Image 1 (cartoon, one colour):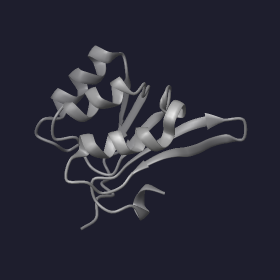
Image 2: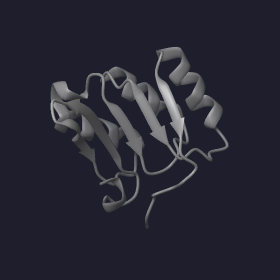
Image 3: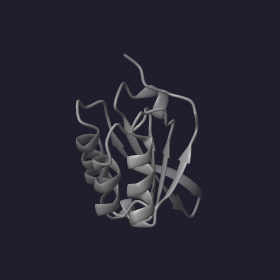
Image 4: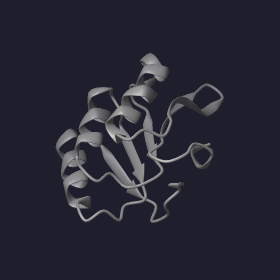
Length: 108
């Protein structure tokens, strides 16, 4: 799903009775934080406890902070930013798991 949404995309995935489902999509925005907010708006209450998947790294911790505010439990991202440690620190501060894929899905 994420590979089909262009640049600065965020999706929220939640467990359902049928398995896992995409519950929110934040399509390409100039701000990764805004993409998180759009995905959260679309997910509604289903954002709580969800997994946030990003098509590219988080250049600043604000995207992780925004994810925490909406109740995201896990962050999946490719990594590769010079500021990855800021994102890791933010996830640790918020008690969130963070997984690095090493593969960008960011398209222009």
